[in-house]
Length: 384
Image (cartoon, rainbow, N blue to C red):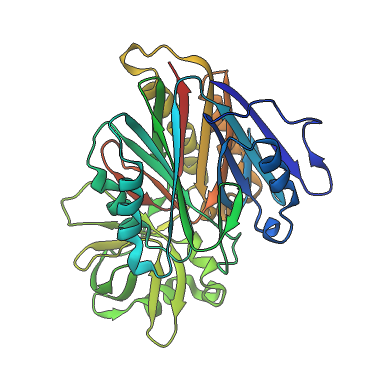
């Protein structure tokens, strides 16, 4: 694999004078973009023109990761030309979130071949139920296939997100790339670092990703009581206080959910993923040091998995970091500490790109894909 990562910064232009000559049918180009480029797609079209054979996908973000740096009003781009790994793109237009399972199932079917090793997914961030999307993707039912990715973002605005498919900015679409063959090596990790506090309550009424009551009390009312003055800033302030959910009191597997929108009339909260009836839910809050340490742990875990089973890695390593916008809001000026600690735990020949998202897709530890919120999720690609 040959790899280059480049950036486009508003008012400064591209970080390189000429684009790397890496165009081929086996070249994957990932573009993580500030939302503003929906009205100024010229830099993206420059890439498309220079790489006519390449597979190009991407999405809007709440901050673009380039190495250890986090930029706004920018493009963070990875250009990876694989030597033996074949690539195939897929897409699904999603008009209503209730179709999220169908979307994941369709993408899995489009990409399913005997030598499939990984699926990397970038989804619309608002018009989707991330847990149902993951469940649909898992219908591929092949333990050897790693499924990861993330949900597009719109800063902290929650108004409009978009993806990039075959180099074009598209609305209401989920895009994916399949990676094929025995040469490609894919590893992943996902870590949180939030602290649980307050009373654990049972979800007593919900439908899919809409939460109506906790312990038979209106969910929005309870949430506002915890937020106090910050309730006026919902849904953005909800990113600072996500919910941890688990199936029952004996379950050690916790998933984190953050708010996408609120409904004053229904007194309900809409989350990025399912809030199943009967599950337990508990508020979470930030622990600055643990957030940064968890990012470091994600890098270490993914690194260990990449080199497991005596894998011999040939050439550079592409690290795609997807972190939740809530982590960025909490960490503020310390945010680059998490991207730096992540990169420091990867091999020296690693190049890192990524974005801040409305949700992360990755196995919880191993196995099938789940939706996560408020995590640092890492996928690394290389060839052996």
